[in-house]
Image (cartoon, rainbow, N blue to C red; front, side, top):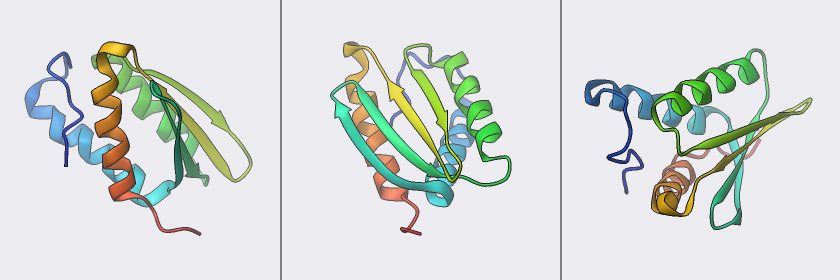
Length: 110
C-alpha cells in the first residue's frame, strides 16, 4: 500500500504514524463511500454520530497545519458527513495514495 505522507509534510517524523493511525481509524469506523469527482479531489462520505463532525474538523485542521497542500471541506448532514479533500497538481500522487488507503480501510456498509 502506498504511503500518503509526502516529504513536504512538516509533522515531525515520530508523530506521522500516529496521524496515519487517526485517519485509518476514521476510515475503519466511519467511511461508508468514496469517489473521485475529478483527479485532484477525493470525496469521502462518513457515517455521522455524536461528536463525529467535531472530531473530523479537528483532524483535518491539524492535517492542514502540517500539509498545507491539502484543502479540506467538511459538509455535515443529519446522518452523514461529506469530506472533500483537494490537492494541487504536484500532489496528485498523495491523493491517489490517500484514496487507496481509505478504500482499504473502509467501514462496511451500514
